[in-house]
Each structure stands twice: as C-alpha cells, then as structure tokens.
Length: 133
Figure 1 (cartoon, one colour):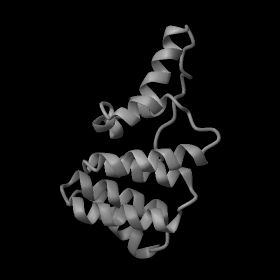
Figure 2: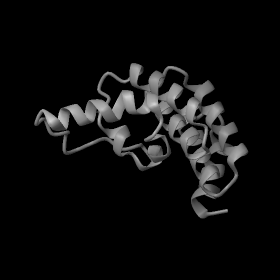
Figure 3: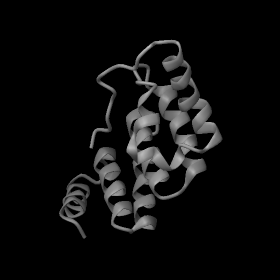
Figure 4: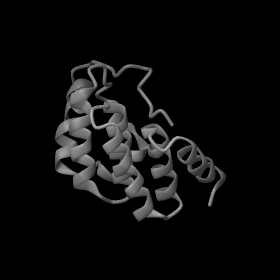
C-alpha cells in the first residue's frame, strides 16, 4: 500500500467519525486497486455527512474512479444541489471524473452548459475549484 493510503488508514483509526478522512481513504484504496474497500469507505463518508456537498462531491469522484457511473452521477446531483458556491465548470475538467465525461446525464449537467458558456464568449473562472485532497 502507498504511504498516502497508510496515512489515510491511520487518520481514520484516530478519527473514525471524520468523513473527510474516509473520503481520502476511499480515494487511496480505489487508486491502489482495493475497490470494494474504497467503496465501503466512500459509503461511510456519505453516511457521516449526508448533507455536506463537498463530501458528496468527493464520494462521486470515488464512485467514478471505481466505475460506478450511475452512483457517481447521483452523488454529483446531490452535491451540486448542496453547494451554493459550486464552480459549475470544474466537474467537466476534474480528472477524477474523467470516466463520466461520456455519460449522458453528466454531459447534460456539465459539458453542454460549459460548451454554451464558451460559445457565448464567457470564460470560466481562472481559479476553478479543486477537491480538498
């Protein structure tokens, strides 16, 4: 296991009710091929913070990286509804969501609006958000 994954495990052991720690652990586990365990951590993070848009966004990223496209889109819908200051163009560029770029609902939510903004001459914010990892 990579050092980052080990660090995430240690953080969860110290703070088992910390959704952010579980988000990090989920991502790390999925990246090292421990997909089932990673998805279990993502679900725990969601259960710990079901009304936190940032948590749900990161859970969506975990689902996308694990190939769970429908769950990822569902989480993105929930996340964006909870984040008033959500930067709408970021998901289209987020490398963690690359696997969703051809999903029809993802395209409807993020790619097509971005395309319309670009065609109308409106440029996206230069400080497009990033995950809190």
